[in-house]
Image (cartoon, rainbow, N blue to C red; front, side, top):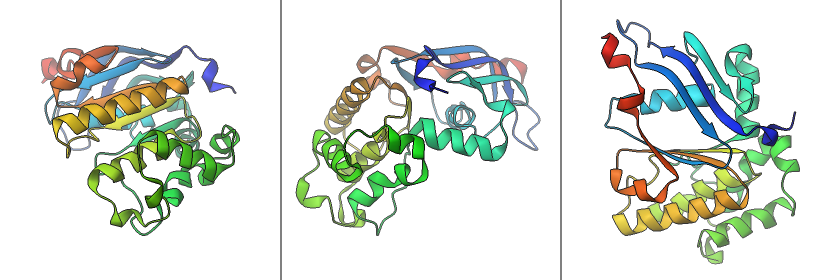
Length: 235
């Protein structure tokens, strides 16, 4: 299946999610749609359900009610193993804490997703390490750092490695979970502009989650999750 053919990358319909031992739902979303190539900024304070929503979009969590359709695939119809495979093939994820493997080199960290996904590997036009170097150069990481363990890099440098790892293999959906929270404002803006530029080059959809509303103007569309999530009305 060519997942890049789907114009609607994300479609949530009548979704409800409740954590175990929680008397009320964390998320109640009637509908949420994100189109191919769109850059969506989702904001909201801690505790409003942002991380829970990302768990649903990646198939790590499953809604008790409703449907979560990503690239035309209803995740509720997939087994746990199939969801893991779907996520590896189609979703690039930038974690808040980056989740890099500290003693692997920069290049080895970036190429890791393509070692686990043949589909992402086949979308790399150039030799894999060459493509990784190209991405890192475009993200303004010095060539002198490419073969160093990431543990020796600064936070800002590690952030660029995490972005390159998410982008390699041209996954059609990029999800970023507050990856700029440890940077000052100028570096945050510069990083996001680079990320948007690289996402545009591969026509990827970007979902960027943050509690920082000053970043909103950089994105095509902005959503305050508190206005989309009706969970509070049911509590």
